[in-house]
Image (cartoon, rainbow, N blue to C red):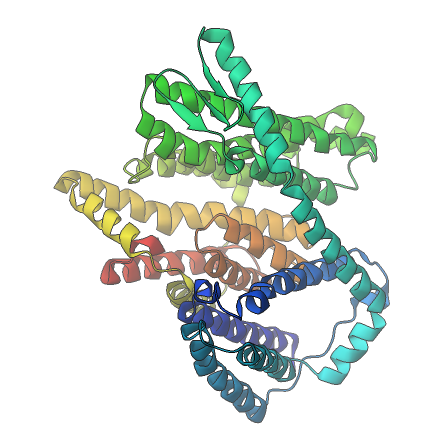
Length: 532
């Protein structure tokens, strides 16, 4: 089996598993087992699932870091077998009605039925493994890499334990946010409301509760994660351990930004609009702060001369050559401008995206300014990216959650526009989703990030070597900027495979544009506007 056929077979097999999991999630509601005998058994499956995901990620990371030649060997894929496929589908077909029985009659279902359900789920996964992998080769592979397997498993346990410990940080961070924001407000107001027991803070007409989710823990994790990934990617250009100082800097800035966010929120609620403060600013300011922190770490603080090796610093003196080349800078700027404009506009548009055209125009101007540096080439093939885009659109429809209330609200807001405003908004929306967004997102995710993680020079018109870790991480990052996480991840995987099979990035942009066109058509025809 050729390399391309192997990758295609693995992709189709993986998509089958994703589709089966997605179908399962549509049929069940975990809340139905909350008060039954099965609650403890099934609820703890979440811990096992999280442990499995983290273990696989850590194992792939260890494989990526291991430089020995023997470690680059991969387990062999199985030859396609109709018999194995039929057996797998038959067991899955038995699994579906058993799932409905377990979750629809959870209050009266005995514990042994839950065990039977778990056994059937395990059989589904085992038959999928037999369908996809050469089991003898896979067992030999795991035995050869047993040290990495053990390290990944133990590391995953530590990650989950730290995750539990991190919940204690809610209290401390909430306390810091309460007193920090209160101190700033007291500098400009003689009287403030500060409830130390119940964590209420505000002014005369607007008071907020600093709940654990407002403590800034998510922003802190995002800041530290972004900085850690950046330190890893630039480990050859930065001085260690000196460069590790960027981690506490990122953490401190994130905490200070959260204090500032709560302070501004209260001021907006007191003097401007409570609806604007709660509905717009509150939901966006956190992401805006996290983006600014990441920008400061990557483009400002890490450029300090005492953190960079001499050779790397000489290259980084000019922002146009920073982070590999002028092409990297030209790719980052439009995406960052689009993201920042989106976040700022959402502060004032928490019900409907009336000003969508502004961010399209801002990003479009940036693309035009840097256009010559992209050096796009004519696509070598059309059919493959078009088919890839069509597949993504179909999967996006089935894997995206249904939001009838949001769809109805969007439709009402759309119909409330005047004819001229509706035409203008629609044209700018089409230009954004069919032209601007495919270009800026592909330049970042299948351009800069995929090339960087694949340890390849960043180019828009040259092929890049395949890397599993690059495929997974770039797809995961792509999923994070979309509401439909599973659909976003699957789309990211397919886009990445198109990039690996192409001479340049043009084919991926075509696939992305086709996917957006078809998703828009599905949204219009079905009224599921949340697909957009």
